[in-house]
Amino acid sequence: DGGITQSPKYLFRKEGQNVTLSCEQNLNHDAMYWYRQDPGQGLRLIYYSQIVNDFQKGDIAEGYSVSREKKESFPLTVTSAQKNPTAFYLCASSGQEKADTQYFGPGTRLTVL
Amino acid sequence: AQTVTQSQPEMSVQEAETVTLSCTYDTSESNYYLFWYKQPPSRQMILVIRQEAYKQQNATENRFSVNFQKAAKSFSLKISDSQLGDTAMYFCAFMRLNSGYALNFGKGTSLLVTP
Image (cartoon, rainbow over all chains, first blue to last red; front, side, top):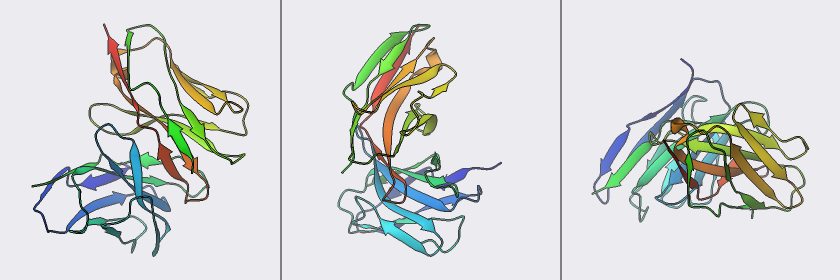
């Protein structure tokens, strides 16, 4: 089946640890995005990538890092520098045409203990 | 900055009735794209409907339709014949053409459909 997968579904982290959230898509999409969702808030953009080996900071990139070594994969690392990482993280991708609709993965719930 | 405002944090509607969710946005661009996404309790974000600003005709998808008022910068979502499965958070979003086509989201409206 074509789609976007995120793993793990739930992730627990101790303070001071880095963790990496996985996002994979088999839709042959060029663009990929990471958003963060907090209770009572809309989604906020962390990072985006329009092409392999290139990515750009979004509105709340501090404390996060990404890589885009393969078209299918766009992992997000939450570093110890992120002050309040507990949140729901959503990955999205969109196709080759400009302004293509974004489709979302199922999300990862990260909790800092 | 393009901001998106959803002024109704919560709404309720009875099954089979019609409900309208409000959304306003702020932009200086002349061409842009707007979306409504649905997030049910599973938290999966699902596209409901999309509107291109250069199109005067309002988009429709089955029971879902929009009222796009470009001059007023308003983009409301109408759900007809509401069903229990429509219970979800609904997010209005604006596509940022100059930032990799990323989306700016409103804070959402929680819709409850009751029997």
